Image (cartoon, rainbow, N blue to C red; front, side, top):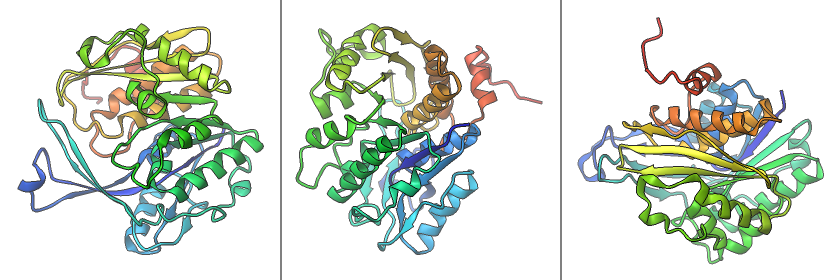
Length: 346
């Protein structure tokens, strides 16, 4: 099967057990994860050859992150080492009417201090068919943005398909630049663009025409996002597909989940899932992207099937603690076929 490379920062995630608040806990559960590493883990679970590229500190914590990737079957031989610390994020898991909360501690991390020329992208892209990055990486630092631009340019020179998850993070764009200029240049190299209405608006000022998303609640209609997809394709003429996730937040514990895919002519819509008990929604978008890449590789002429696989895969992620989606192709296809019973497999 085609080989995929993802590029970004893997972090140490520290979270109070269960639904405790930061002020209540005296211990933290440890998980390693990040947008692009989560996509890599999903793809490895589906049997896709995948390498994760990042910069790690050469210390015990960096080694733990490295071991987590190796344990999940992700290729790590293109990872470089340097710097003194791994980025950290603290997660307080919400419930019902109390939303989850994230606090970042990733300034001066190994990845934040990456610079142009540190990674041999020509070597990285040997025998590679697909490259994935997210909007989180250029938000970390100017150096990370510069290296991301190096990567997408090299990927196109090698004839590699490029995808992005726009992933706007207001808490990260802090190094004195406007996100739109950087993200516009990077996204111009992309064949596949994933985002939601907030990503499109915050990065590019693109909004659904004639619709106020904040008043729609759980009843957002897929058709409302046709204008977003069309505006994105007009802004980025190299894009072959624009995909939007549709999350209806009834509460922190109960969401609806669906997606749409637009190929320039047709808008494909998935079924809508009711996720009535969310175990962990962090990484939901990453699991969608991992499922989408797998689906587009497996069903290159069937965008509907690819979209349906992505939505089902990410629906299952909401039942799994941690950043990464630890499900198999068979489990995703079972849900796609309508079996959501959750019965014990004996």
